[in-house]
Length: 291
Length: 330
Image (cartoon, helix red, strand yellow):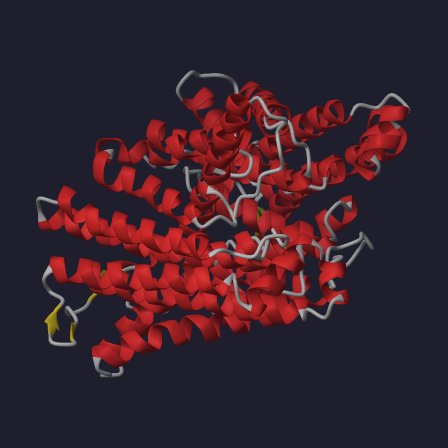
């Protein structure tokens, strides 16, 4: 039982980060119906930048994290500038393909600058784990779960209660009608990308204390976050969180009981199962292009 | 696309152009190393020609082409080293394995459209790469394995020149098959299903069937490419067949022009540019390609091949001072 509890802690810990990435995918999907391939790279850049600001330039941890989050929002804005405004054809496919370009460029720049060295960040409140039922719980895990819940609540309120959030959803649903009510589609995507970038940065600074961060980790974390978003149903905020935890726990269980080398495949196996059997995800009935 | 009967000249243009390019390339190859790089051009041409069928003409974005590529290469590796099959037999099996793998992937995933299909193929690609990387007792794992050169048809393929000739012939045949393929009943059905799925279904096209067959053909092309790749580099390792390769293939094909015969040629040429003449910038290759990609998406949304067609049409219209007519690009 202790062993199972330990595995579940590890799963939930990773799952909370996948959930944050999945929330970012869901925001972009809600606002544009596109998939943001750069989401994982935002996370990676933010983790590394926070580490550099903290350890090389001596910024206090909180400020280094804040700096990384601001940078995340800026990366989101740049992505919007390129994939939506510069390409001038704001259909889901063009935006998606544009973000692929951004993702490759970001990864290449980080590799050139860091030469593949992994970067670390201290945990937010000490490294000493908490004993729960005989298993060890990292303090950072508690942080990550709390951050995920706060982000989920904030985003749900944003999309349902604020003018900006409602107009974002409106312009994704029906661009022309929304425009006739004075909601600009391009303005809406700008907000969505900035928000998604900041969220990816939060995920980046949250996971770096647990795993270290190097240039190639963004792609995998991004894809797992996408799998999580699909499991919950793209565009659903609670779905993203449940999907993230599901993928994280599944990975930990497979790693602990079945086969450690193939643990990282389990997220993608779940992705395929969901795509083939229930492409709307477990939570929401969005129209899916399927015949 | 449907209003004009394909003329003989139109059908022959890809074959003649490809033949000329493949025949002239070795003139730029003073060393054996250059020749093996040009063999890489033939391999990329095969991969892109196959990808162009399903993603270009079929409109189904595949981000899993590298998996079928790897399946071909590992068919040769595992077949010769572990199972003791003759290299020739393995070479013939490579496209079959690629096609069967593609059918297995396509059966569940081709029911999905648009980005969902792209993500399903991506998932398959990632899982397959993890398998190549982790199943050390089957694939040799991340360190890769070396294989012996191919001897077949009375030719010794340890000589890079012979490998190039073989690869060039296969690539040319591949282009020929693709050119014919898009003109067959299945090919027309495929393009009709891309243009309008309901309309195609109404006139009796089995939209799922034509896509499945095309996906299998694309898989077979990638399988051959993988076998050639294995016998060209004589060393097979999982990193060649990762998600990044799939994305790069998709990117250069989009730059070259989806659903155009010249698209794969432009795409392969772009990759060759980096492999042969810009080797000093190899670490900046992804960055430069990404920049070219974004610029091309803005300037030539239909790809360079169509962009060139449009430009020619516009110039012709200007010089004749006639009202611009609708031009078609095959």
